Image 1 (cartoon, rainbow, N blue to C red):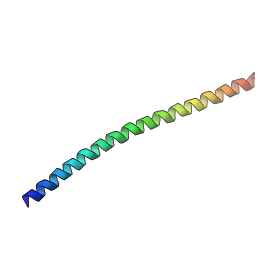
Image 2 (cartoon, one colour; image 1 turned 90 degrees about the vertical axis):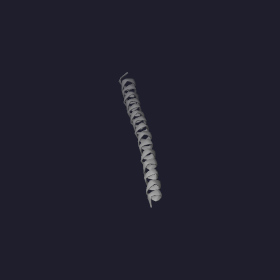
Image 3 (cartoon, one colour; image 1 turned 90 degrees about the horizontal axis):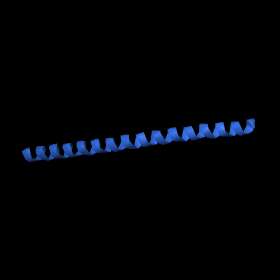
Image 4 (cartoon, rainbow, N blue to C red; image 1 turned 120 degrees about the vertical axis):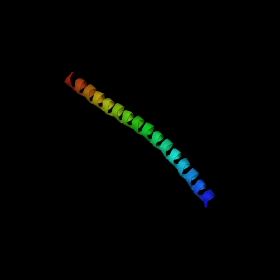
Length: 57
């Protein structure tokens, strides 16, 4: 029974470490996504401003 408990404990620790790594990866991808979304929004604003300036001319 002790070997079984030890095996389960090791599996649990390995899964915890794997989940923590996955969480880090997720957070990095999330930050990248939000930055890209912000950049796209800014480009849309600049494009709209540019078109409005052309229409004013």
